[in-house]
Length: 109
Length: 199
Image 1 (spheres, rainbow over the protein chains, first blue to last red):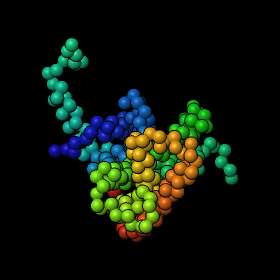
Image 2: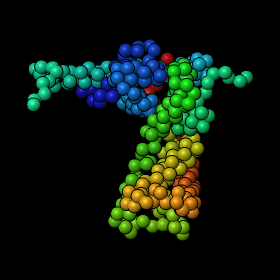
Image 3: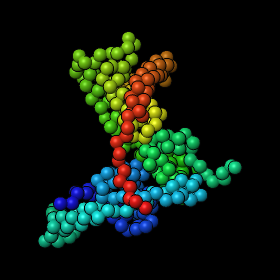
Image 4: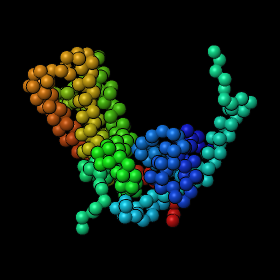
């Protein structure tokens, strides 16, 4: 059974997939903000990335920095195969929970 | 050579670099600097861009701090509520945050900070911030019980001096005890965290 990933971890992992080779910290932060339609703190994204790496659901590699960032290295992230499996399982669980229900749900008054 | 690029406040950048793990020090500070220079400074102007930067430094600091700050909540509020006997004052000074249990939290904060980043200054920073957090919580607790306390330093300036002295004692104690933990944390081998892909 794959690791259970929470909603925010899913948002970060999906951002890694969407960004592909361009998935470094700043781009991930902006992508997560765009998808969640809200301001997200850098600390929340970086601590999630660290947690995903600790759970071996994502891995990272360093690349040289550019002048605009003072030459500081960029860390690029990618989901691991365990990360992809965890996302598939999360989607399947959500689909199973919603199966047979008409969406959007009607509010009873 | 003097850089013509806009820069965030030096102190905020120094704090950021102090709280990051060695493997993240360059990449995370670079990410925030890049966003600050390319987007925020142009869109928000210098002041609001600085506020944006400081806010994100605080957000990176919080995951490191909450483990140290959390024990301060019961530690500060329980002895006040129940007057428990383990509230032993370690030094013969009547000031808050000087008990044996407080010392253990500062020791842990210093150890945890230095162990995580391999820098003694991180341990000092986490221990100092932990004692500051405890002091603010204690002040808030008393201010809720008696709201006149909030106005008191303005009507009687000597109360402000007393509060500042108590805060300095608490901070000094926190940093001094935290320094011991920081040295131990720096000296012991780190627990490996990062899973790095071979490039």
